[in-house]
Length: 500
Image 1 (tube, rainbow, N blue to C red):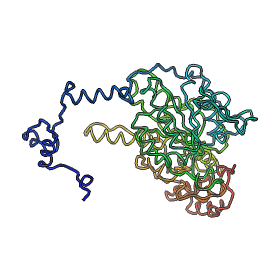
Image 2: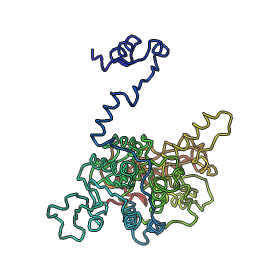
Image 3: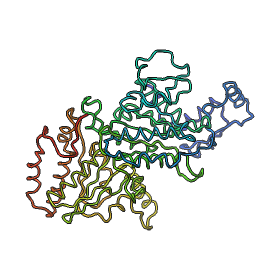
Image 4: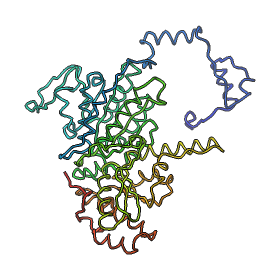
């Protein structure tokens, strides 16, 4: 019968028999008072049973792990450390992965804070450009380096040391998350704050070790999770094993994970600075929840990283959305919401819509679809719990309150990612994304296949405007023909990108 597993609750007779068997001094009247909430019993700290338990625990070295309420003081990085993220890439192209690594390098160099950072890379340090850390930070090995590395003649050769700072567990995501959890809880278990920065191939994070991140959250881990080579179309050359179109959705299920999909380096700088501030900055009670894991998706697609614009809406960057480019054209109005690698495609679509169709399209960088949804859901919950009181307006609704026209949301992830905010906007709304198992071809062909490239943004915008009567009825069909949108192998302008 498998009674032990199948029995979901005790009857009153069972409960009384259980009490009698264990000789627990609780009366029938106490049990009968509320069968669903029987009283707890503690024999007292001086009882032989408790004394025995405490004695055994003492012989084992005390309670492990022990959470210490206080930890060593943390002096956060100097604001100048983030300058590298604000400067942009100038005349050179740089993917957001490389921009992130440059920022991490400067954080490691910070004399008062750098020693607290624990980079963790289970695979492909060189792909991410993190081999530059080998000679200086070194790879941690408590026994030192016991072999001749095959790359020993290179400038950036493997260097292992008992004083190493970089955790390199091999191709072992489970071990890497375990190391992440150990470092990310050291503020409580050892009273010594460390900031783990776990960098991995995007597809191999939440899909493979999501349960381990849930356990990390349960242990109140703090740190940064970096999903590199992110997106479904940006690493097509290695097949579908890298076609990550859903990590943000998986991450959204973990309430301790703050998910961002930044497009530019300066956005990352503000996000990382904010993360460190929330985890370890300010007064002890100044942050509602410090036990957070910041998840940033970064890409391997080289673009010209812009310098941080003047009067940047930093609050918008951190809360999830800000306008990155306002159209200067007077014409039918529309809005393009894009995240991560798709923001440059949106900017190119803005140009084409203006020059070829006379359409005005403002472009918004959505740094976090998930945080926008969480804020909006919190506003709904607050309204539900406070009937009759003025309801708080969700941040995304507030940001787009003055924006007119239909919205086209675009991402290199599945459409469900931008659809998280659909219900909170009164606009006509359409999502472009990368749904399905994937398409292992060039980036341009993959994006044409999924219909989330530059020209797909243009055509979808025209379709929404035509349905409203704002542009000619035949414009979308003509545009689809003109841009060969049904030809998977056709090259596209701007946002298609090359494969590298």
